[in-house]
Image (cartoon, rainbow over all chains, first blue to last red):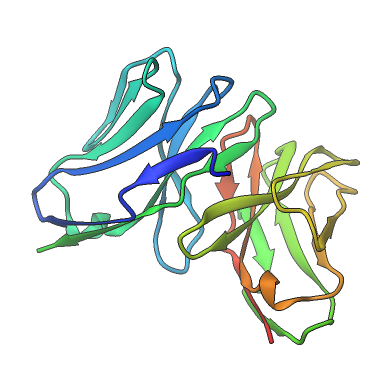
Length: 111
Length: 110
């Protein structure tokens, strides 16, 4: 059973556009929600993260929106660039410090 | 700091062979994890450790074993390799549960 559901599976965006990736969860015990970025042949790297008592967090062109009542959160990439082309994973952390990952979104930003 | 280092980067195993995937971290993190990544499936937790001498099963532990004799090292053992274990394996460490990943080991079982 997938603890964190992620969509879409793949996404193609024009340079300068907005990329939006959505995730949903059921377990209300999750206490931290990070996003990871992975380039081919590399390990995932932490991109941005949010706690459930915050509705939005912005770091540069990357924004997480969090809806606690709906148990949903999303990653917005503003002014998407070809260098943003990668696979993005949402995740949720339990109090026991285990991370459960979504299935990933392959983002392609075309020039 | 090197961060999390995994060896080898690539390996081909025959069915029934055994091997150990090595993982070491130099950040003095208490938590360490092993994940496997399969296409379209995200990352699945195999085993984790909250400190030296303490390990526990994750979501998909069957066919694997781990040990944690030091803070730095967390090797993953495959005893009888099966084709279903063909995957990319990632080791990670964490001070608080937000993981820092190694570069991965691509394992093929034929």
